[in-house]
Structure formats: C-alpha cells, structure tokens
Image 1 (tube, one colour):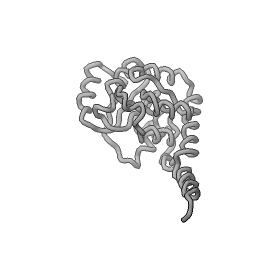
Image 2 (cartoon, helix red, strand yellow):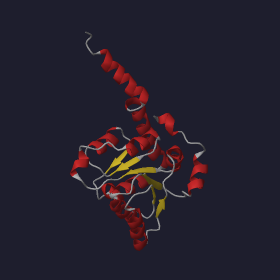
Image 3 (cartoon, rainbow, N blue to C red):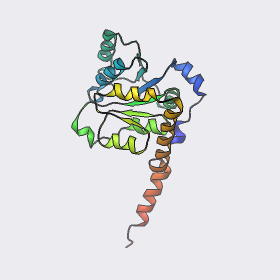
Image 4 (spheres, rainbow, N blue to C red):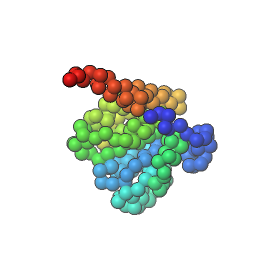
Amino acid sequence: DPEDFEPSAPRDELRARYGFDKVTAVYAGAHGPANGLDLLLDGAEATPDVDVVLVGGGVLKDSLRANSEDRGLDNVRFMDPIPKDEIPDLLAAADIGLHVLADVELFRSAVSPNKVFDYMAAGLPTLTNCPGLVADLVENADAGIAVAPPEIGRGLTRLLTLDEHSRAALGVSGRGWIESNQSRRAMAARLKEALLCVPKG
C-alpha cells in the first residue's frame, strides 16, 4: 500500500543520511544468480553520471563487489541489507528504482517481483530489464521504463535525460496505479465483488 511507504523525514535529510548527492538509482533485493546483477554493473559502467546503489545480500555479493572494483566503477556502491521498515526512507532518498533479472525466458511470463510494487508504491520511477509481464506492468502504468535485459545503461541514460519533474511524474503515476489496482483496499474490493457473484445454495 502507498501509505506503507511514507518516509520518516524530508527527502533532503534522507539523501544526506544515505550519501546520495547526484541522480541515484537503487537496487534493493537479493544478489543471486537469478538477479542478473552483472548486467547492472554493465549498465553502471555505461552511465558514470548515475550513482548505482545495491542494497541487500546474497551468494554473489562478494564477487559482484570484486567485479565492480576491478572495473574501477566509482559510481557503484554496495550497502548491507536494511530492515524492511527502513525501505521507505531509502526509496524516498533515491531517484530511480532498479528491477533487474537475468535474461531467462521463464521470467517473461512467470514472475511477480515485490520490488517493482515497492518502487511504484513509494512513488519511485522504475527501470526494469525484464521483458514480458513486468515490462508491460511498468509501461502500462506509465511508471518508468522497460528495456531489454542487456540495455540497462540505455534505460538509465533515458531517465537521466528527463528533468526532475518528469521523473517525479512517472513516480506519481506508478503510485496512483498501485493505489487503484494493487493496494489492500483495491484488492479487498475485488474480492468482495467476486464473493458477491458466487451463487448461493
């Protein structure tokens, strides 16, 4: 629910807390084989004017950090996992929410990523590299940009070229879509409607 993502402090204060001082894209989630974060490092390398912050843990985190250091990616930072109730503050401080998956055919039709709904509920413009269901969700909600799996750099560049107002408008649109379609209130209304349609007897 959007109301679950209200930050605890003003945005400027939160950006200072996390050390975000330019356009910042945040990935919050697992660092495992399915997440395709090597593709995110490629995208970060292609867009040095965007800071990329990866928050979370997983079996590939150490190797991803080493890969980033080997490449000299000064615009990439790794953060330890944070409590779920701190996520609204993190997202409020960021400019872009990153949803990244490996290039796997199954993900085009059989995935429902929590982080996309989190980003949208928080009013954060979303960039996804997952074609199919997730791309359709983000684009139909006018909540961000969808690109092909290896084109994260292109997506970051497109979002960087937007002014702050235009990026914010994507976030507002995504938040509105969540409120109307995926909030507890909206889902409860749909469930009630379905139950009232069940024949008696």
